[in-house]
Length: 233
Image (tube, rainbow, N blue to C red; front, side, top):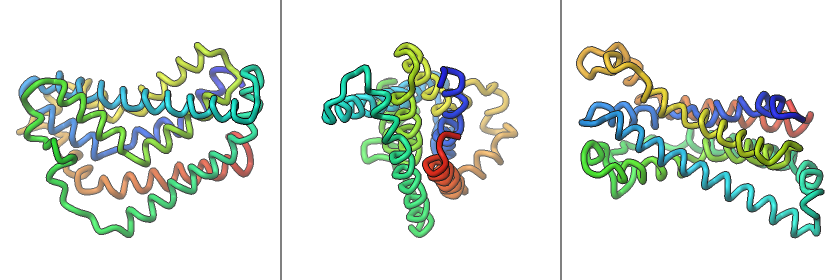
């Protein structure tokens, strides 16, 4: 498998990880405050950093797994490829299970995403608070993280150069955080609080975020299970 075929294989996982209406709604809310774009950018830095930490953790775990089996680094990709389909099956099953649990769970009103933060509090103060908030929100987004882990284990197990693996990881992180940076690059007159035509879209996302994320979990979970049963697709 070469670099471009790996990217083609990973794009459904990267896009699936990016489907997070709740995060997009948070970004629109941050955008309405003073220095909104700087605060959304800080939020993106935190989210991207969280995924980078997950990438390091997954890669380290997989290399340690190879060493525990007595394999050499030269044989690592061959060893990991034997378990790639099993990991796809496990991750796909987890995604579907989480989707079912979210459908069965009664939705709750979320005044605060985390005990230390609220959206109104984040519209001012030092930017490091938005960085921390982004890392927390992205790092605990279970469905997105599972999709990202599925992508990262495919990257580590691929037979491409190390620099290409790093580049692929950064590309996946970029796509997976597009629910944030797409808000950042949206023209300001489109996001104006009083007359922006995006207001109905923001309201729809806020009320249907749960169902959109569940649909993404079911879709990518099914994709991973099928891929594990018939091979790479």
